[in-house]
Length: 111
Image (cartoon, rainbow, N blue to C red):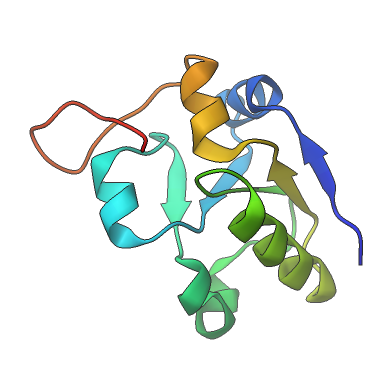
């Protein structure tokens, strides 16, 4: 099943307007830096946590560079979720000056 993708700039605008953003990276990546409105469900946990993902709205899916989010968005689409990947992932989000926060006192960073 093919899923659509959007640019990081489009994702920044959409999430600023309330669109649901799913981050499928691992906890350590999330802790270093993530979008303030994102929801963390690591790809490895997605099958067990599908009930946490809204089915009544579009869901943007992001990872570091794009491969995990594509796998996640495909699985979500097969489960009836309107899932769209963020092209270039959090690397593109950071390059596009999207807002970032970290889980600790260190400055947020994407790597």
